[in-house]
Length: 199
Image (cartoon, rainbow, N blue to C red; front, side, top):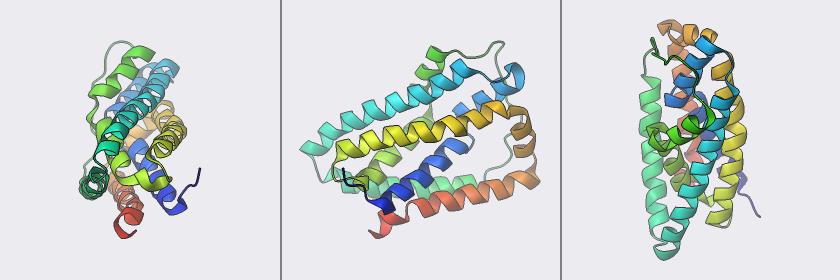
């Protein structure tokens, strides 16, 4: 399998931003970490559920791209434009604020099933598939590599939100701290799509 390193680097940067920035999964993990401590079943459900979703959505799109090959470049451009918009939204986002939680930690199956109704998961997966499919010489190989990389990136990123929930909640609720964090994430996200726009 031949890997295009410039596209790989862009995908890794995108994956880090997607996994590290606030979203439904991370907010739920953070809240669970604050209230119940480090929840391994919840974290495992997020990681494995998301990876399975990447594989299933990616392989389903593969059949579409084989029938309509012109669709992939169009999706790549649209995905890159959407990620630029997402970077702008991240740059100007405010503090997280208070997050409501339930009375018990989320288990493995509910956390895995939640990925299919998580809008950030859909945005991340469709954006990655559209923008970073040229990571290898075949689309199917790129999907397989994305699954592995997303899994490797999500474990420490989501785990940090769960493990350090209380500290991160205080940090990102402070407007003085959240602005530099959001700006840094926005710059990384925008830079990650440069290989797609200029290849």
